[in-house]
Length: 168
Length: 137
Image 1 (spheres, rainbow over the protein chains, first blue to last red):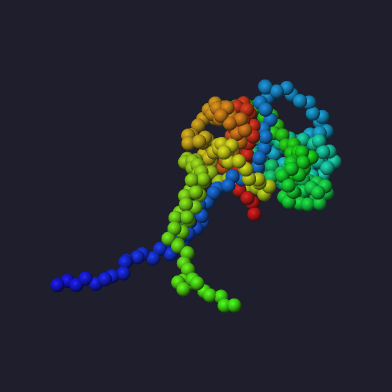
Image 2: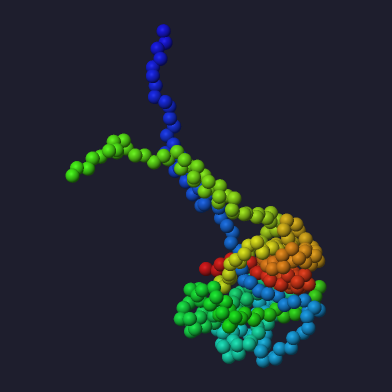
C-alpha cells in the first residue's frame, strides 16, 4: 500500500559552519577589552633606617616643593606647572648629575602631584629623544632594545621622593 | 601530440566539513592562553591623567593597591588598614622579589594618604611603584 520512494540522503550544508565560527571568534576578539596598565613608574628610596644616608652635594639637587595650595616651588622660586618641563631640561643639561627631589605637603592634591611628576617625565623623555637623535640619528622609539637601554643608562631618571617630615 | 585529459570530469572539491573544527580549535587556543584576572574593586576611584605614561610590560609582576575617594584602601580583594600594608606587601615581595606595586589612587585624594602608603611600602621593601594614570590627550 505504501510505496517507498527512493530518497537522496539528507545532508546539512556544512560549508558555512566555518563562517559562523569565524563570526563567533570575531565577536569575542572585539568584545574582550584588555585593560592595559599604564602609569608613571618610579622607584622609591629604601627605608630610611636600613640604609646609610648618602651625602649629595647641595648643587646636585633640585628641590621641587608642591605646597598645599598646589603651587610649585623650584629651589624656592615659584614656578607654574607647564614651565617645569623646560626649566628642568635646562637644569639637567647644565648638570647631568642633577637629582630632582620632590616634596609635597600632606594636603597637596594627588592630581597636582601627578601633573608635576608628568612634567618631569616629559622632560626626561625629551632629553632621551634628543640624545638618541644625536647618537643614533633615530627617534627613541625606533631604536632597538639594546640601544634604548644604552640611552636609559646615559640619561637615567633621577627623581627622588623627599623624606616626609612627620610620619603618622 | 595530443594531450589527453584523463581526469577532471568531476569538479574537484575541497572538503570543508572540518573547517569549523579548525576554527574552533583556534578559538579554544585563544581562550586557554588568555589569562584574565579580575578583581572585585570595592572602592570608587577615578584615575588622574598624565601624558608621559608607560605600559607595564610584565603584568604578572603587578600587584595593585586601590585608594578610593573616601580614603579606603583595597589590596587584592580586601579592604585593609594602613598598617596591614607592610605585612601584605612584604609577603608579596617574598613570593615575587620584582613585584611592581601599581597605585590606583583617586585623583581627588590628598598626598597625605599617598605618603603614608609609600612609607609603608618602603618598610616592606616593595620599592618599584607605578602611579596608575590614564593617557592625557
